[in-house]
Length: 432
Image (tube, rainbow, N blue to C red):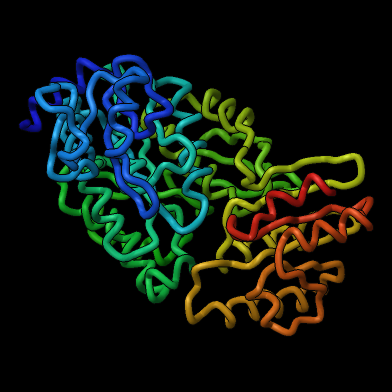
């Protein structure tokens, strides 16, 4: 079957699924394969559960002469080609977003602001990989004004691959930092890979990049691009400064040198979210959202998914940031926590994963910073922190810490919980 013919079937279906257990009526099933599963085995189940067609790449699972089975060479590649084809048929203006830290929060802030005026499609959760990006694009409808597509990577070349599927008109890199060093090989590898978004846009005549002017790495990477800058300098397209952070971020912003000053109180934890908020303001302003509506969107946005969430229990105040961790984000969280006005500060920190040969050195740097800040009440979790021979109490994993918390729960503390998702610190708050 040709791509245009498959596209006609997709348009008649309207929905795409890769899960035979979730099959909206009249949807199109793609039989994807992974390390431990083969979607081809579930094609018949998908059709029985409501799908109109099943795209498979193994003829052994097709029923002879049944036109509901569509045989292709590679189901995943077909999904990606179909998404790109759909993107071209609609011509929706697309904002591509990547970065080491903050890209999901920034994506959600941008989408919240733009949705005040526009019909916006945006990446749900963190569906930002070679499967998530095409699935997001295939949710595009003709009445969408804009799309905000998040793109993640942990190996060189992955952003290039994703931008060639999404083909964004606009781009933003939140920042570049030390993460996934095991896959990227070095910090320079991170810069090159994130910069693949800029490289793609550099080849387009109608592209625009929204850029954090205070970040010299990004400024150097964006040479030759049409940029819309935001930051702390008084003359920038959008500029501002933090006014409070105890615990929620408050800031002032204005457009240009002489613009009206706006004050925004957010539900965001951490000064490191200030550039993310400025990015949303910048993009909102660029696409014509009224300032009062921008302010409203930022005030009303409440973070979720264990990203800098504030939770008050009967005994403690928790800052839960357990979705992910790398040296850059960990240091930013610790610096913010150090400056925060709070009583009885306590830290529960988990390993930072995927750092390869740099892992021990980077974990030791965190220990050194804890000593420098004179944090006293510190608990470390994970095998990497265990190797640092730190003076702090260390547990091999979250379950072993939970056993002690069940016997002796801290009370009256403000507790930062931060670590890579794989350490499972998201299980800890129920015991605090």
